[in-house]
Length: 241
Image 1 (cartoon, rainbow, N blue to C red):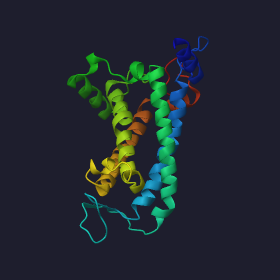
Image 2 (cartoon, rainbow, N blue to C red):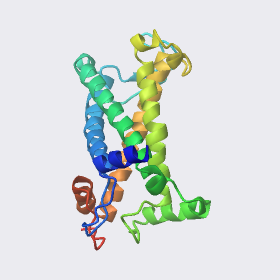
Image 3 (spheres, one colour):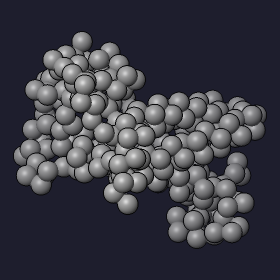
């Protein structure tokens, strides 16, 4: 088994390059990251098209024009786009699921989660977390822009293991074909319309994460971090340009 793990790590770029002058981003992280980026963009575009076909949210099992809504979203009500966007929405969703599974498996095998995302126990204090948040709010650049701080680690873990599973669960719970076989997916959430409302909430949280993520990239050096996520190489001098 150790030999198999080593071959897997070599295949996905986990083993360090002794001839490289700088650390490397893992190949499995980079590939799944960019697949996820494209999938999420497709999901947001097609999801918006689905939502404007009926921009009202309900709670419970049923919801339609004739029933009282929980929230009326302030966006145009346009009949039709839902039919056009649903197939592409489902396709992008399954691509994201497969990329996410590959990322989780690769992250466990290469110890990515343990070494890069799992916070150190000494950092898990309200004072330390508040200090990092305060630095971000004051637009203060980190001393080491290539190392995840405790807030980033907790956020990424929450996105990977809470937010995305929530989006997938609520998405499946909206499918009558899926819930006809696994009805508990919808009933545990309060019904199909409850799943739809929670799906919208999770998607909104994902958009908020993406906005903050992009802002933090601009703070630490957008071009250099994007380049590192494409090529795998971190600038030896720790440049943020």
